[in-house]
Image (cartoon, rainbow, N blue to C red):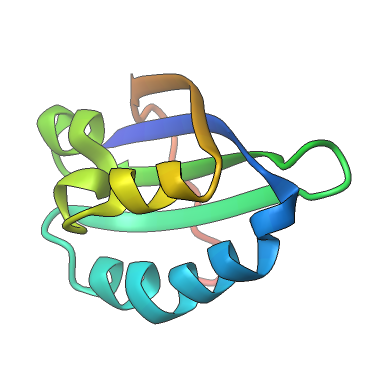
Length: 102
C-alpha cells in the first residue's frame, strides 16, 4: 500500500527566484532517485503570500511522514532562510490511484 503526503506551506514571495533556483538545482535532482518516492508535485500562488502545497506518494508511511527533508540534507534550513513556513502536513493511505495513459 502506498501513502500520500499533503504538505501546505507558505514562502516569502520576495524569495521567489531563489526558491525556484533551489528547487531546480538541488531539490529536483535529489528527489528523482529518492527511495520510496513514487510521485512528487508542487504548486504555489506567488500572488497570495506564497501559499502552496506539495503532494507526494511514497511506498511506506514512514517515508511519507519524513517527506523530502529526509532525502535532501539541509532542506529545512535552506527553506527557512528563504521565508518558508510549514503550515500543515497530512499523511493518508492511498485508496485509489489513477495514472492516465498507463
